[in-house]
Image (cartoon, rainbow, N blue to C red):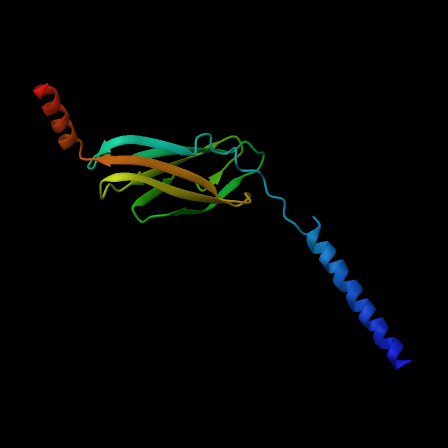
Length: 151
């Protein structure tokens, strides 16, 4: 009798475990997040070739096409040389937020800065990319002019 009771307890324990696994894997407890891939029309901005001291900034526009408020909960950059300002934390339905990204021109070369914006209703952060090529243009132009003058 004790042996049968132990088997019954194990069977109940296994059944509860299986039901728990089913509930976790089903959509019952999942929070449905929206697709945020369409919030930014152009997520890559190429500033182009500029001189080191020139201003290197770009604006990204996040538009809310949904019928509920979206809140920006975090903005992260991949480098301390990138500064991000946003004019809104909450984006109402039908309105937009402007994300201004400024890159500190500290050295020469090609740079690609990634900015991730986390929004409360989105499954994944939105990725914005700022591309810039920093050259010492005055020396490049001098070399080009010298080459043409010799020809």
